[in-house]
Image 1 (spheres, rainbow, N blue to C red):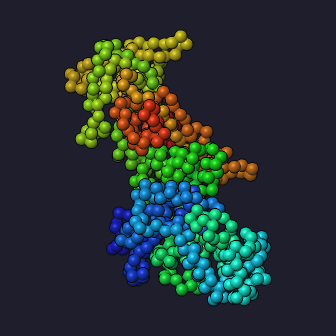
Image 2: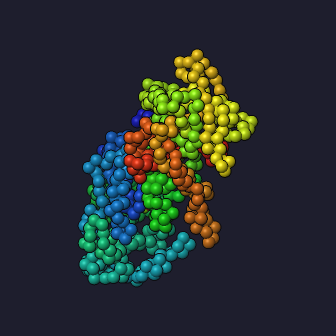
Image 3: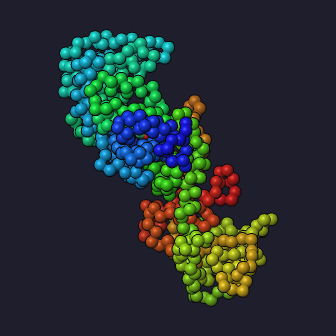
Length: 564
Ligand code: ATP
Ligand code: MG
């Protein structure tokens, strides 16, 4: 579809945007755009929800409209206040603001009830006393027409009386339901007299014990949209077949407006599982430490891991909006994260598995503080001071006793550049009784230091390091993909999705160190450990021990296993 004058040219095509533009040009809703994000508070938001958030809040912002945050809290059995608060925090973190427009479907329970009474009075709804199994059996399926309930002919008065008594708590769960009276022969099964109210004696996190009947999603959703004056009700594709019901209900009622439901494809990724039900199973089963475990695809997990809201928003924009379900390669998500971190994360030095190095020509007790830029290619973005002393830590991996072809890091007799310092040569290897390498004796060539006569001398390798006396101990948590399989939800007979869990999705490294400039880094601080990966300070950090989460490697290590 072509872009119109209202659509900025640098955005990818988006049929929802096109549709809104059309509606505005036709003068629908007086040109207003009102959308809503309607989470059910039965779990934490995941990266799929980011897509819906970007679409709803993004469309509203683009057309100077507004977007409501509405909790679809119609199922008291699975919903909790903890989830409401977590969802609000996640929406804000992603960068969206609902302003005053925070709503709860439960705020409309009285209105929803009154509209249901209106449906009964109009002969468009009836109380059905079949059991749940019978209702299912009578409904038929794709090949078989439905069969009318024997209660379909109840009089308006009898229905009004029974519905009032359902509300009053006279019946047990499942004894009756209120059903819309539409068409048991409809080709669309959703139109075969769907239940719109059920009895459920359950405590609701907002309405307490006031209600023992609760509206069904298909009924509550469209009426809530209409009450709020929503113009465009964006939802995922599985609701396409529910749209006739959405429209039918609103057509029967004297509601303030009739929003337009528009469906789009869910966002899904390879290697990622996005069903709240299954995520809850991981939390309950202890396979992860909670909803915000950095291995989780939840917004709170990703935040804790170090992913940025900008990266997620860029990704959603790039993926575009589709009418067809597809699975996005997870490397696209990882690329978006890496891209934003590359542009924004300060470069610092950390050593995960230290090997002691003694600079034998450096005076005992002497410390020099080096001004080191956070971004080598743009020192104007800031510098910090890095101490250099006689004893250093380098990465154990940066030493090989027997150099192989193409090895440009340290080995006996070899030279390497220490980042921000100069060239050192390895003169001696010290081993312990077990024959393990425990220390290197090196000399630093002063002529190769910054400002020295040979500061430009080239060696092939540059490595990172820390002053042993100043290094801050940290715990490093190295995260990787939670699932080993590209489609973790697809399991054979007898299998379970947890069989696909990557046992190496978390590796905890004790005895790692970082440079002292990170002494004050607060949880949420994101940095790049040069040559290693991007890291983010975890809230588990204490003043004694900082915890750093590995957000993501510098390169795609799954595509190319070496070079991490
Ligand atoms: P799940 O299927 O993961 O349990 P849900 O659809 O039940 O999620 P809701 O709380 O009902 O979760 O979702 C709130 C909004 O987010 C809905 O409009 C829903 O369609 C949308 N949404 C949920 N998952 C995705 C996804 N993977 N991609 C895009 N939008 C999504
Ligand atoms: Mg849902």
